[in-house]
Length: 198
Image (cartoon, rainbow, N blue to C red; front, side, top):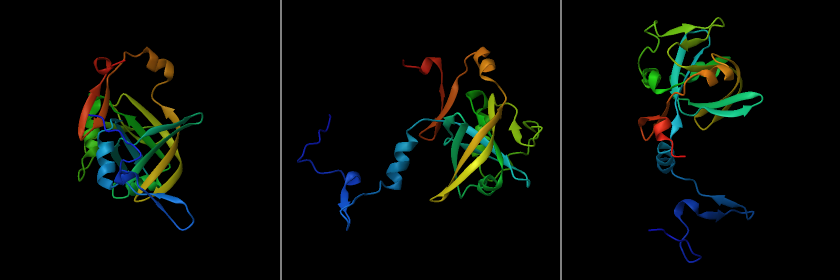
């Protein structure tokens, strides 16, 4: 059944507007539960971000990474202030963003597990000549220099400029198409040729 809004229909609670002193309209705020529920059902690509500000490396799994600009090549992500990685990410000059596929899901699970030493197994990671930590099994990564940070309601939004990757566009074009990994509604999902609908 499709609900049709008419001029006589009540305005939904989440869309009500109220008038303030100067006649400006102020929208009510969507509840945190409603907001989370909507984004929980929105599939997002999976990445693992590593950083080291000189006191040892940190890693976290993030679905907030997005391309911001291609020229210059900028990416953006956010980290909660309550994350154990937050302090290092606020101090680090560079980060490595690992793009996770189904073949490296264990790295994603590692970055998402709290209260463990994510670098205890020294056989799964190494350092670049510039010092950053990379997980060797991950198919693609970007090393990026942090260019801006913005504090926003208990989170830090990080903007970083890509300065190096382990593959060029030409090299990626020569590789066989691989399946991707997304996170949706608290579950990992594999996407690929069979999941394409167009």
